[in-house]
Length: 444
Image 1 (cartoon, rainbow, N blue to C red):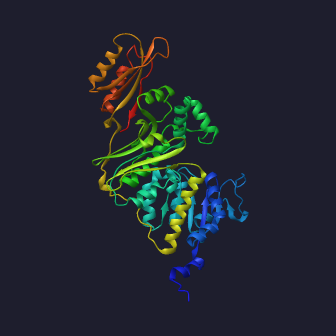
Image 2 (image 1 turned 60 degrees about the horizontal axis):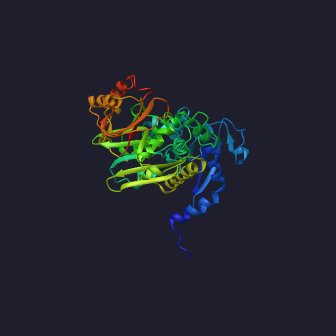
Image 3 (image 1 turned 60 degrees about the vertical axis):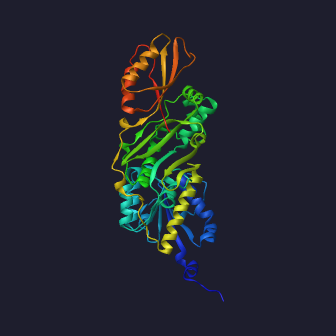
């Protein structure tokens, strides 16, 4: 005789069906819908849970998608999902802040659990939304908001729950990483590499958020909140993009044993947190240096697990959809088996008191001067750097690339950002300096 446990009874019960409403039927929304419809039996066989796509909302229902859904499953009325009595999980995929914020809040208030991939929304209003979800005992999961299919959020929230984090550093934007990879491998100009990225669908027609470091900053805000328990406002994250990186500097960096990457960096220094995004020189032997193309990677250092590297596809409809489906399944387990929603933040807020200002950051620097080839220029540069307590680790005078102008490449020892910026302001005013000095920070 077969023994039927309580959970076994529930597998055959209609309560095993989880009804899902998707708001946003674009590239990601249509991909999630396709997976829910095409893999429904697979999900049911693997988990005993029936993920039922009930309704899809979008203002544009005429555009062609790569998934066919019954007409009755489509609506332009978002309230049918937000307030629909049969909807268990709302998947918000419209992006942006408004009306996404209102949709998420109203969905939570109407008793729904929420899955989102909206990094901008969470970077701007995550703390408020998380508190609302906790107060209402609802889940809000957002694995797809950072690094696509790389399970970094779950790893921080669950896998490393007992750790104190020292640093979270990573390549969080596939578009910028692809551009820098092409510039390094092919010697392409920034404009040519960007155009190629756009032609392959890796970059938007307006790529500003990606190339200016803003997309990485949004993701860093989320990771900082999870890892360090401190909400970092966007105005407190220094963000510098890759628009001014040239193939020449990539070549010079290679000669010195470094690779240039756009890094998002959050580091604990006592009770202060450094949060910044900028191009950085990494030693070639670092694992992050070998991350190429549209791939993402996040390097974590914590007290118990030591050093960890997470690597994978950071964007694209399939990796992103994989993360969204994982969140839906986690919530489904909670609905059916009674797990509480829990807090989003894993760290005590008292750990970090304030965000360190960029002017106070101390690091090493790569400097590329374009100077007239005449005696005394290097001495003048060295004197000004010395006035601000900046010492030179190495200097190389490169072959001329244009008449009478010589590239001088320098690496410094540790220096304060404020001092470096004041020194360069004076150096760039020298008559012998023919264009603005290139500054790229080194990351240890």
